[in-house]
Image 1 (spheres, each protein chain N blue to C red):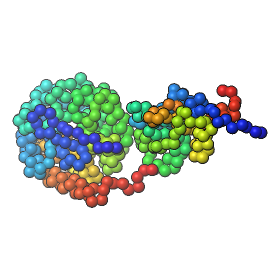
Image 2 (tube, each protein chain N blue to C red):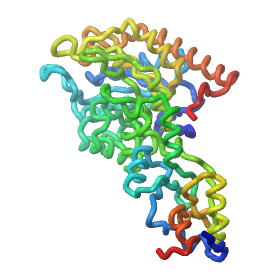
Image 3 (cartoon, each protein chain N blue to C red):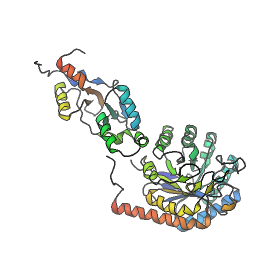
Length: 141
Length: 293
């Protein structure tokens, strides 16, 4: 099967809007982040500061790796600030970048999601792999 | 987490700074306010000792002891009389004062007089008390409940913060090991310190054997020096010890209060260990062995 490269679609056309994925403040405890991830059925939460700038992300993979490393009781793990177990300075894309480039980054970095931030670092959306692939394949939403 | 420092003392009393690299602070006095004369006598004697040791001091005494084991035990001198005496102690000795309060309706008056308000250990997760403490706008001495893990104290901290409180001294007074027995988990100081707030060790309640005497609590005062050295060496910002000139006849906590004849000894040691720890931090840097990844 031959699929023509779609170089015209932009990230902002496909990204999840900010009301459709979990966004938390840095003071939230780890357990609340897990609950949010479960509710949203996504493997990522984005953590923002007061100015809504992205400061970190927490993904399923980060949690798996932490479970094998953290030696303290779960009750202590759960009340840690979410920021303590998050990836700070995560990889991001801009809303006007090409979708194809963004998916190439996902492939290279082996990630399922890319937070989308504007020039000021403010979180404006989330690029999730499944809708991105569908858009590239020309499959209707 | 950055160090959050606190300053205790309003008006013309001594200003006591707690946290970071400030000197170790002593918080102490008779458990209960027994009378005006007794409060003054102890304030004078403790003040002289703290001056000799050269240690900052906050006078602690309570007007209502709502957690006594027996209804026959001395319940306290009462809100109005107690706060009047504390106010006079402040004025006379220029020392900041702290009292606990176990009913949220007493918060405003307690905060009006006291430089610091104390949340009792049994009530450390009681939202109404934490709210009342925060609303006083005074620094808060928050005891860790004997039933609480040190990490779960963060929930109480967050409650206080949600009500506008931003000066909290997290204090360990021992943790239940089964019935009638307390132990000190020294890890609780770095764990509670992760909140960024200063931490305190309550030595005289830690050696308590809660309600071990049937309808009153016993205590093993002989271990106070050992636990004080351990806690200060572990890293605390303040040391809390109830002190009495005649423990056998003390109206509250007779089996746990420190006899004032030993106070200078203990404070001298505590100050020396605290100073040594600061020097070690200077020499070797902050504790950073196997940081959690």
